[in-house]
Amino acid sequence: MRNVRRVLSTVFVSMLSIGLTGCGFVDVHSLTANTQRTSVVVVGTSTILSNAQIASVMGQARHGITAVSITESAKNVRLQQDVQAAHAKMVVFLDPTAAEQALAKVYPTTHFVWIGYSGINQPPANVTWVIPNVSLLASSAGYMAGGIHGYGKPVGIMVGNVPSLVPNGDIVSAVSSGMHIAYSSAIPIFFTGSTKQQVAMLTSNPVRDFIVVGSLTSTVKAAVQAFGVPVVDVNLGAITGGFPTEIGQVDARSFLASGLAQVLVTLERGQSLPEVLQANAGQFTNLAYFPGWQSPASILAYQHLLSSGKIAPTQFANTAPSVQTTLALSLPVPTALMPASSPANGAGATTPSKSTNQGTSVGTAPSTSTSKVSKQSSGTPKTIGSLKSSGTPKG
Image (cartoon, rainbow, N blue to C red):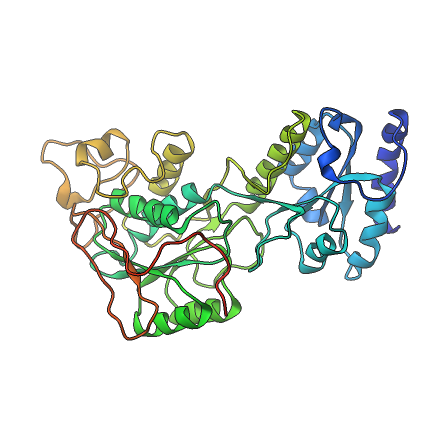
């Protein structure tokens, strides 16, 4: 059974010692208070499974875990036998491939867990989809985008495949809040509709940078890439993919570890796994070349404020905070807005070319390419069209 036989055999002893019987897949809903007496199979590449954070999570679990390392091109031919041989009660895929995802349809009565899924379709009903904290990432993305070409320039907000429990309106509010704290007067434009409509809107509404949330269809992604402008990619934890011009990256491996830990803790408590599990994790890293007026240290400081709960992701969705509030949070303020008696800016701020403390508005690009984008000077984001629950754009 390839190189995984050694890994599997080390777990068989513990499984036999607690009296596990039978083979094949078992519905994860049977995992209740006796979860510690089951085997959980975690599937990933050797690179992912050898990550220190992920290895630590698996090492601290209170019940046996079988780690199946997949490195061969024909991996999915043998994956089924590997999982069955481990007497799997639950199968967790870290950064699942398309072929691995297909197993969920082959075994509809088995419950799978996908962590780092980046497809354009909603997962089947027998899958728990683990995602990072989208609101935290969207707010951070707004803060970053607000400092890039931000003053009076359009910023596109593209929402792809995200769970319906994360409404588009919440994403837009989080982005707007981040932009307000960056004191940006940029014009956010929310692109919604079918794939055809989104491409048409992109053609008629050129932007200076993009915020992408979730996976886009290949057609829409190609249209975004054609602009060649900075992209802040709020992907849902996938290691691969992204955009050539993306600014920063979601710390995927930290998210995979956090998501796995949350899954195991949920099971150890005897609780059922929901359809969607939002992990308490999600941050951007690799910010050394961030081109905005704020410094990379400012971005990290803002993300820490979000993750610690000192700032809510949508707290400033309607208006910018006062300069005093921002300085009290140790965040930078554009030099033009600094009171004469204030101390030096925190977190390594630099000076933008223009600034304003006016509220950022959010316009929604209409569903036809001939309509104009609406914008306001400040206040509640104005919607043209609808901000419905998220999902896969129809072709």
